[in-house]
Image (cartoon, rainbow, N blue to C red; front, side, top):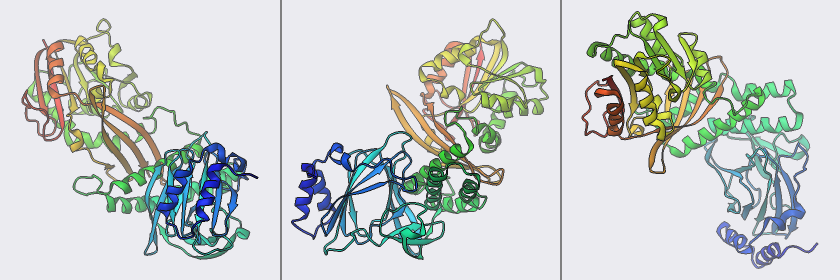
Length: 535
């Protein structure tokens, strides 16, 4: 058949020389201006399920091969090199995920993993070890592959290494670098490297995904894969990996690329677990997090600063946490409110919690009276309270343009002479914010990736949260999503409370319990407490 002009251009350029570099090959492909329509005659999205992707030859030039790969949703190659290939290039016409690897000292590690922009061209050299795939749930795409050598061979990509990390073997392959290859497709085996934690984990995930594509959810096959991916032995392996990339003094990562890789591979594992357990990714993002929250956040925060400032509030104001009525706005699991009842001998009927998350309220109801509710819907005509409490910067999770309304509504449901007490974070809270938090028994690990986000002149700290739990033996991953917290200046928060409470307003460092100047922009702990009296 007559080839499209773009592909014929590449062939003509390659027939001029066998001695090329990946950079030169990349330039040739870019200059060819290939369009996805040029590749459609070789598209193979209906490839057998046992094949990890479609693979069709366009042209064999003796010292080079030109192919089209077709990637249905969920298709991934194994980790591989390109056999005899010395130079080449790949152009991708979709949002492919691409990873590169280092093999050194009998260990294989992931150098980087990223989503490629459609149309990008990647150079291929003899030493490249990589993996490609389609992470999309619905969108297929194709890619153009050119591989070349300086001397003509029967199969340019022949004798390729395919890394089978479950077996710590290298399979020598003369065709597609697919998962779960039959013996007839493997030329020979040799000893291979050990994968570090994220590399082995992702390999196991994609191996399981391919078996599901082939066999469906056959119990015996999938249960074996589940155990290899999520067994209890993953706990010490994860701890060991984290020790290598986390500063023990600050709990912040000292290797941003490996941190990114780890998070990507854990998210891929979470997606597989959701598929195996028929869990929806659209559930309340706190659904699983609520079960882990106390061990990760609640108990640690109570110990580090919340008990301290509540005792300070009791001792330095005319409020009485033991006898007065308290509404807790954003009560979470009810841990703090339960402690107030025990510490100050408060009657259960005097404390009421509310939270937007039904999952959190379900946990809280095991301790206190609680309902789902929104601070913006509080009605002073129904009831007023002696004390309004809000812990763990709940107000900063609200849409930023509603912060003032929330404070005004809170003031409206507090009795004259009553109080608000609650904590907030400063605009530079990321200075303190750790990347890793552990439960006391180290069986729950929370990975947190914070970022500053500016939107329409407002500043936010956006944190992406992954929780890894071994509470029940095997590894269970909860992707809690991205959560934004509004970062208003301290003086603005102070001014809102002064405006709507009309009485004395004090700001304290939440840990040191020292008063913050009205001119200050931050405090040492980056957490502060607001105590406001209703005038």
